[in-house]
Length: 474
Image 1 (cartoon, rainbow, N blue to C red):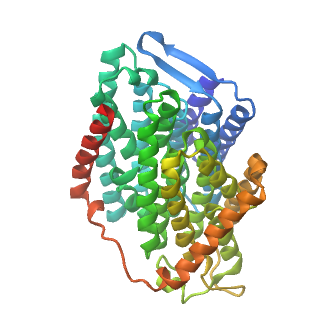
Image 2 (cartoon, rainbow, N blue to C red; image 1 turned 45 degrees about the vertical axis):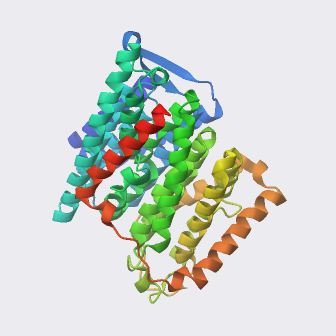
Image 3 (tube, helix red, strand yellow; image 1 turned 180 degrees about the vertical axis):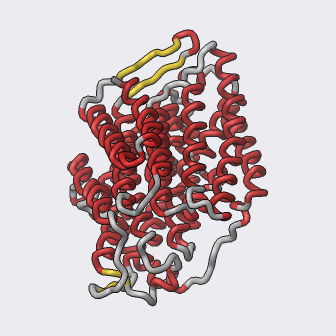
């Protein structure tokens, strides 16, 4: 069943070229099947292992961790397809979305480095085609930039995978424990770059913010997690890898939220905050699945909402009232990611904070405070019920899935609702709003985009590689 489920998106994606009128339906069907498959493995967390090539350690593994990531991918893809339903997207768009969806699912069940390499490379090609879908000069340049950075990182990754095989005669994740330090450094450079982590992931803001709205939602909601998932899996399997993953999680959370607080563009702010939230996923590997689910729903909803606002500039949005129903959807998503009770973001934040190691606590609390400051920008925007602007067709169907999912997922961790657990997030939100109104709202400071420039991305990779090698040796 697992093999059939993995192969189905590829079959459906290519079939949509032959039957273009059915492309939307095929895409929706594939995403619904992924939702069911992921939910099944969450409810019945018995691990399933498939050994495809024992002599090479080529293995697939599905468990509750995979289930959370697969469910996220299914929900996000379904919401994006419904959002695009009546917008006249071509069969090519849906075909690439289906293939991308299937490739991301493949990354979530890989348990060896060579299978993961194949999945990540297919993801790169499908992502490039979707990013450049509009065929404008800017979209093609952004897509090529992403492809170049991604392929360069994966060359390092492939060398690391071969070093692991040389040491163990196997590509399995477990072999990383016996691999040389340079193997760890090279593999993690590839995964950090693909996952948009720390400074090696600074290609992400431009790529996610300049893509079309549904593509941005899909990239930030599920696709980017294909690079994060294997790091979480390695951290859970190998005790020696856990500190490296947690350290990069903390650094990423602080870096992303630092940029997000001072960003003046809505989509760039959301893209930087994706970087930050991926840090939360890595900072507490044992509960990464639930946090990834919550973040995927919230971030996809926020990108779709941002695409229906009158402007991308916060300065202009403060002077232009948005439609009250859209503002309510914006507030609900912003409340969830800030950790407000009754939404799954609250349970995810509480669970993550309880799983942190002592040295992580102060930094991650600062990142949580920065999150509430960042999203206060949305919460305090003006709105009116008689606004002339109206969301695109399919918007509310997508919101039902994404925002509805936040309420339903909230039930998963009902034990979080104690007085002590609720006081801290509410106090953090109150403090964040106060800092925004008194300081950040009046600030004209903007962090430089120097490290985001194409000519510097390769240099940043080199510095990260040196750091990783030093950490692996230590």
